[in-house]
Image 1 (spheres, helix red, strand yellow):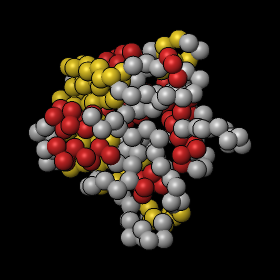
Image 2 (tube, one colour; image 1 turned 90 degrees about the vertical axis):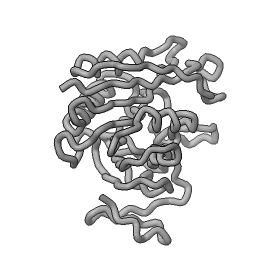
Image 3 (cartoon, helix red, strand yellow; image 1 turned 180 degrees about the vertical axis):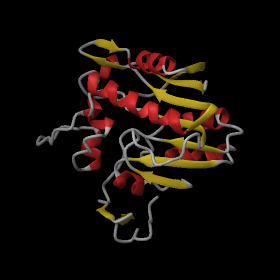
Image 4 (cartoon, one colour; image 1 turned 60 degrees about the horizontal axis):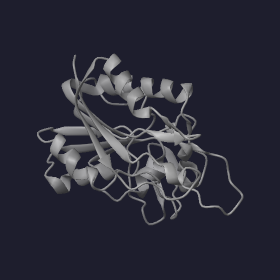
Length: 241
């Protein structure tokens, strides 16, 4: 877990590691506000929940909608964990494919994997065009294990299999596994990201109990501005042990 005693200077302590957090650091892909009460409803009765792709910890807002359990977030980039001002009960900093938690520790996992879209672009752009990517919002190159720098492809898929395997290790039998995921457009065609995540978790022994499609505002600029996928999905699984 991290010690956040040095907020004034922007320095956070994680074990013996130190990071200077620029004031401009922000996360480009936090949860859509309307999803938070839905998560709280789905997680009702759970004593604890883990977000392995914790970002800035926005999942903790479920406490404002009746969730009374413990919210734990794991995030690979320490600056994002520090930038969040949400009421997270416990932070862990590290790769979601190597979680520090015990077997069957959590009643639920609720998270939003990266989508493998152009937000994963990670070159250091020199022009003045508007960009919303993980790398540009963090202000430095992402960790090599961060899925935020992985375009849709074999590396992206393999990394998520590793992460899901670890998530199932720390999830209790019959525990809830909730993911918020979306397809995206590439070269004018819809990339079936949702179906891949769904089929992967089913193949790992999960049982799909609910699939919710919610129309959301999408980015209004960029190469595919006029052909955005109109909705995101919330997939709800049970861990069949």
